[in-house]
Length: 191
Ligand code: GAR
Image (cartoon, rainbow, N blue to C red):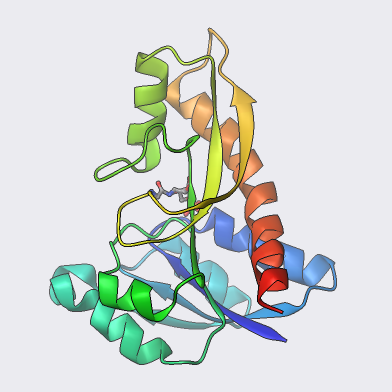
């Protein structure tokens, strides 16, 4: 049984999609712990499902957050899943876990990625630039921001009447399908 850690900063709907997949079907992995960089609703979701949680407060730890998470995880997990985790993990953390850290991003990377591009900011930018499609990407994490090798993407159409809010909802529906599938795929490659 593979062990994964899920890192979050917010509502945790992507975390929920992993939890639901694990309880609905036979998967070859379990969530060992959920880590957040602030108090957030995702932590409550984990607790409701009896998953171990840990908060590393980014405001207190600042640049030390990677080191603290690194020490906490050690070699305990096979895969680290960034599911709406908004702190940037440093090179040391990533280099120790090459091919074992993945991230979900709510755009069709390389479009609308990079530093400062997260959450609603992305959907607003997509609407402002009048894109005709958007979507989500799961990618390996490398030392850059949103630059790692793409594992898989899902697209949605941007309609004339879409707002950043409606687009976010549409993209999240696809994220919830994509992330559990990508986890399975990445773990299969580790076998
Ligand atoms: C998701 O849309 C995720 O793709 C995004 O944050 C949201 C978290 O939602 N991540 C980023 O923007 C990373 N750059 P959730 O807490 O409900 O899963």
